[in-house]
Length: 116
Image (tube, rainbow, N blue to C red; front, top):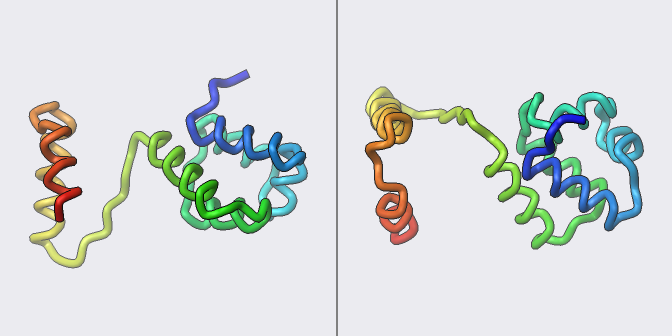
């Protein structure tokens, strides 16, 4: 059995809470059980559309949806950022490089971003 991501753990807990199994949830959101299992273990990407489908299929509260979205953000290693200009792309890449080479103080950055 592969290790579950935070997102996988969150989905599993929700499936238990809502008394549904992997196959039933997969069918209700229009994906195969193999695909949903691969998402839970981090082998397939998590999309906003998938989160919406799970939210709708299970009838999740806003708080549960937020927890699922947070778990998804904790489960990804790669992020795609769409930009509107070369300047925005340059800034995004500058941040990415600083994160990758560990020269960006995450606590300070988080504080700056939360203030704005």
